[in-house]
Image (cartoon, rainbow, N blue to C red):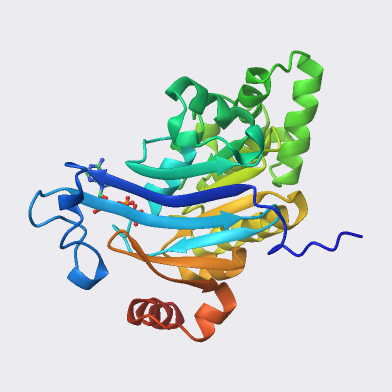
Length: 286
Ligand SMILES: Nc1ncnc2c1ncn2[C@@H]1O[C@H](COP(=O)(O)OP(=O)(O)OP(=O)(O)O)[C@@H](O)[C@H]1O
């Protein structure tokens, strides 16, 4: 039996001092920004300090939440980790890449894109960002498989069927265009595609925002089960404490591009320290 707790287990994803500035990246842009100034926009340069000095580690089998209201910078952090955009500064390392010794920010865009096949997968709020709606569910899932070298038609079909079963999409829909699917079903296919190559790191950006409450509850249930059973290291970005509470063990609270508080999710929900966290928790309690 392993004696490792999630906390003592080596990280699968490590983010250190991550920053992303839109506009002039010089230090002058930082002055006058952040929660204490009530803005992420530099008064002198007009640059947006979307995220600054963000650091965290996520262990295999652990889920970390990032919460904040619209514009707080949480999606920027996620996009930088995913490689969808370049960080201005900081380090991002995956244990699966050279045992964590490479800063992904130093890789060429082509090398960065390759990591999205096996090492790091993302599920977006908008299914169209992660799926081709004019391709069948099976075809969408086949994409990442063929990209890493799967060649057998039967093998790919079998793997796609296995994944669809796992996300509870009826196999009878495997050959239907994703465009014909409901919102909840599209999200399930997006999750199946993300898991196709068993990535060690999974990023979930507002995975249930925009879905009807009952549909969202079903997708959240599915995600919770998958996070528990796959051992993936997950980062969950959401503005909704309900989602963060359901899926994550630890959480970072972001405001105006900075982390204002972090801790165990249940403790932070029970006893938020920063006034902004208190406000978010009060809003979640309705
Ligand atoms: N391409 C861009 N150019 C300029 N500013 C940007 C760009 N993308 C994001 N921003 C700004 O960066 C800040 C953080 O945006 P981000 O999308 O990370 O926020 P968020 O917390 O994820 O909000 P939301 O939930 O609305 O996506 C915002 O002020 C946003 O306007």
